[in-house]
Each structure stands twice: as structure tokens, then as C-alpha cells.
Length: 288
Ligand code: C2E
Ligand code: MG
Ligand code: MG
Ligand code: MG
Image (cartoon, rainbow, N blue to C red; front, top):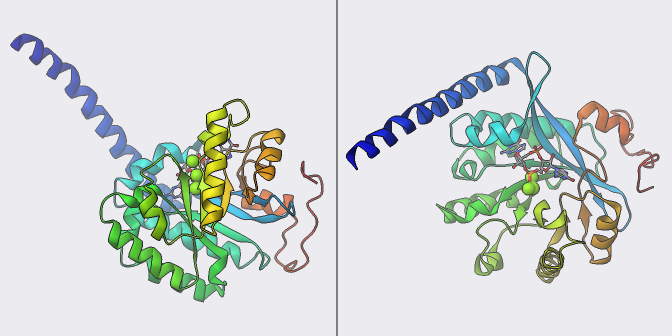
């Protein structure tokens, strides 16, 4: 019995240490990457279903290493979120997105993902407010995507900060809705403008009756609370058509476009620095 235990300990310790080592290395490289400007925001279009017009984009972080390879945010964001570095990373993302908004037509918005812990940071309201001032961007064009994880921990502080951000005019979207700790009583008082249905319900909604029922229920719930509803992970035209029939306001997914570099996004959607207010139709787009 005792021998078996000690064997287990010997087996597990090296694994745990190498994991910690990997994360430490990742963090150190990430810090250097941030300083060297190896991080970029890619932009994935969000499309209004009714007019088939561009509503804006979600900014998704991309880390391109010196050898040209991309490291997925699914890999480095969770590590960053468990460490201090998520703070400079997010301040950078907020400022870059706002700088980008200053070059885009007034009717387009950009959404930035915000880790729950940053809503405990007193600086966030000033970081957002100052950047909007400096670039002269209308606050409602910036959307902050938060997840239901804000319902865990110091919820009162986090909801208070969201309230303050909304007071300066910024919009808030509840991301990955349906996968976290949603409680309908919280939902009643939630300071958000938009609900984003998680892609895991959307992907197979035409094959899976239960997913379809969940998507429909979230759309109806959001509308009953006068909230806008967005579906992420829209991969096919039939799914897009059904979401439109169900009254979903905005869609996002590979069927419409993948996340694109700023340059490619601006080229695809006819956005020019000098072209503010003279937006081109979305020609050559699958929906046009
Ligand atoms: P998210 O905020 O839920 O973003 C949506 C993810 O789904 C993105 O993955 C996007 O590329 C992917 N996606 C878009 N359309 C489709 C589709 O049709 N099918 C499928 N299967 N996937 C689709 P990505 O870019 O790898 O980002 C993963 C997650 O990393 C994000 O999930 C978000 O939680 C986090 N993240 C990304 N950028 C940032 C950031 O700047 N800050 C923070 N805190 N988190 C970020
Ligand atoms: Mg998001
Ligand atoms: Mg999401
Ligand atoms: Mg998601």
C-alpha cells in the first residue's frame, strides 16, 4: 500500500514540474513577444442578419513567433489569465482596437475579450476612457466581451465595474452564453447589452433538436429582456438561414469569414482610412 503510494508520487511529480516549466517558458516568451510587437489583433466580422450588413468585428489575439508560426489564444490566454501578464496584454488589446476604430466608419464596432479578473482592476475604466478620449472614438463603438465567469468570485465588484464602463457609454456582451454559471436570477440584473450564444450550441443545431431548442430559447430570452443576440460559430448557410428565421440579430462564424489580419479585413470589407462614410457594398461576399 505504502509502496504503491510512493510510486504514484514519483510518477506524478516530474509531470507536474514539467508542466510548470512549460508554463513559465510560455510566460517569459509571451512577455518578450508583447515587447517586440509579435502580437496582433485579428478581426472576425459580425454581420447583421436582417440587412446583411457589417455590424463590426471581434478582435481576436494572434501570436506570430519569429519563425512565422501562430500560437493559438486557446493555448496562451488561459496561462496569461492565471498570471499578471493578462493585464498589459489586455490594455494593449483595448488601445489597439480603439486605434483601429478611429480609422473605421462610424457605424462599425469592435469587440474586445476581457478576462474576469480585469474587472477587479480599478484601472480598467480609466484605460478604456482615456483611450477613447485620445483617439476621439464614440464609446458605444467599443464592445467588451465578458463571460459568465464574472458570476463567480467577487461578483459585486465586477458587476459594479461593468456598470461604470456602461456609464461612459461602452457596450458589454456576455460571451459563450450557456456554457458557464448562468443563473436566471443574475440574468435579471445583468448590466449587458448583448448575449452571445456559444458556438457549441450553434454548430449542430440543425442535426440536434436539443441544441436547436437551446438556441431558440436563448434568442427568445434575450429579446424578452430587450437584449441583442449574437450567434458565434456559424459554419454553414443553412445554419445562418435558420438563425435568421429565429430572429437572431447578428451572426459570426467561418461561413461568413475567418478572423483576418487588419489589412485583410479592411481590404475585404472596403474600409479605407480616407473612406470613412463611403463604405463599399460587400461585393464578392457569400451573402451578397
Ligand atoms: P471567443 O471569444 O469565444 O472567440 C471565438 C472563437 O471561435 C475564436 O477562436 C474564433 O476564431 C473561433 N471561431 C470563429 N468562428 C468559428 C466557427 O465558425 N467555428 C469554430 N469552430 N470556431 C470559430 P480563437 O481566436 O482561437 O480564440 C479562442 C478564445 O481565446 C476566445 O474565444 C477568447 O476566449 C480567447 N481570446 C482571444 N483573444 C483574446 C483577447 O484578446 N483577450 C482575452 N482575454 N481572450 C482572448
Ligand atoms: Mg469573444
Ligand atoms: Mg465566444
Ligand atoms: Mg466560445
